[in-house]
Image (cartoon, rainbow, N blue to C red; front, side, top):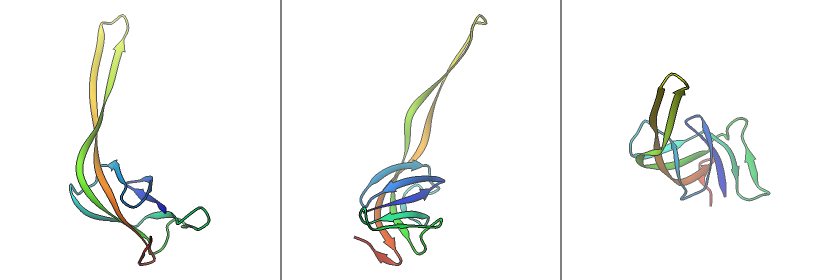
Length: 109
């Protein structure tokens, strides 16, 4: 059983008890609900597809902590001008755990 959910403008495939890193959310910790469920699949034969979202569907999650991604190095250079710069960047992320997938007001197992 899995669902495809839109979180912060990106789509994620989630299952119950999954821990995923998403773009930084407004809250630091606590419970959060995502109601933009694009697809729900109980198995390969039972699939519900939304147009664009499934009515009454939601994914309940908990924000565990705010984290930073891996450091990305940015290097600029202009040859023959003695110019070289190195900068680093770490993306701000939120670590969330998926608690429940609810379709039509009923918890799905």
